[in-house]
Length: 311
Length: 245
Image 1 (cartoon, rainbow over the protein chains, first blue to last red):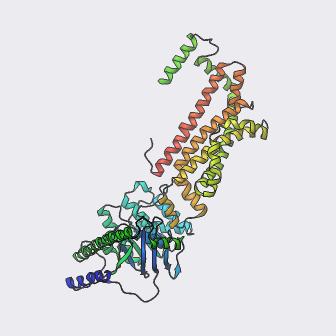
Image 2 (image 1 turned 60 degrees about the vertical axis):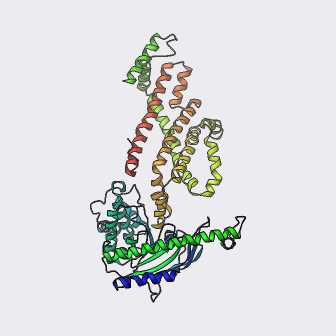
Image 3 (image 1 turned 180 degrees about the vertical axis):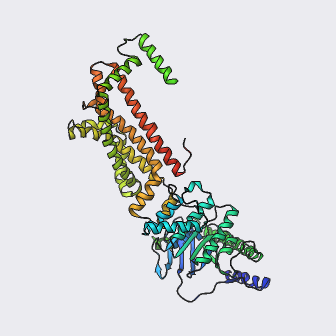
């Protein structure tokens, strides 16, 4: 069924504009920077957050994980960061398996997560010093990156004196100043108002076009994914899985109001809705089958086996 | 205005009340007695003595109590071993330590300092534990992903984020320490404000008793309402918490 969906997704753009702006991403030669192989995760409460997820991210790629809430995109990101150990499969970075948080990966949160008692400058310097950078160099870099996100003049402000968008930019500056090989972003602009969000997207796009960092960016906003991503990995919920892995072939810098982009986003949204509906149908069918198979409301045999294997 | 009124009523009650005037001296008599104590240096010496003991006992309880509180909050092992004892002993009025302290340290300076320590240590530790447990988990996660660990984490992230709560604990600890000190000095004739109270009692000098009480209240309020208040307001402002007045 997913293949059929994919076929439809691909065919349409061709039929509409003949450009093939959204194509299934091809397997690229060479070792990927991030390799997610057959990863599954089941929470203790039996919710299957991820099921057989395979994604390869190459160095310098901007990959967006897109999906509704509950599709496991954040779980996957936290697993990449090493804050959560998936119950199955393997995640490796440069061929080395992820066992915990590491300096080459940095998580950017939905909330600004700044230290409230430190000024903007001190927030950056403190994080830089923790990685062993000398005071002078840390101060120089803090200055440069605060200016880069357009907050020159606010170095000595405290976080609570700034607006939400400015705080977010400070977090972005802190992350970029630390210069990690991989930037993992967890819906970083979701809590911002629409206008600020748009500005932040343009900001991030500009910075990325200059630095070409490897970025994995989680979002539930289809247009955001299309503006930012080289690739959009479309995920679905219950169980959390990858529906589509699409390459976005729109020229940069991208404009969220570009009609081609708007059209693509409309189509992805439609597919997501369809997947959700069919998911709901299968879930109901499964429930009915389970109820018939285990009248006493017992544990599903497959789950019991899984539990045993894990415990 | 209120204070003036209260003083006036007090003076009137002392002069015309139906009780023996020696037992309830008026504010003028008390003020005179205090001035006398201050003039011959006894008051100053007693205040200095008491505050020195307080600084030792309370200082020690902060130095020990804050790390203990952090350990209680962060280490399941420490929590399971020490928490029941902490809660239990916290219920014990600190004066009860006095006989034991006398046994261990004799009638010495150390005994009083120990009672002050015992009185405030657990209050500081428990408040610190609360504050550290309540730290925004988002900040801890941020520290984790930024690779901030070890001493830099504890001193640079954990304690500052818990500081507003810890300050509340320090204030509470201070008031416990102050009480414990007075109780200790009353029972141990070893100088300090407590002893001034004790001698006032043996000489039936009500003016001295009331005067010393006024000094104790004044010092307590000074530290509590002025020192801690200022500190709290500054911290809360810097941390961007509710605009505390």
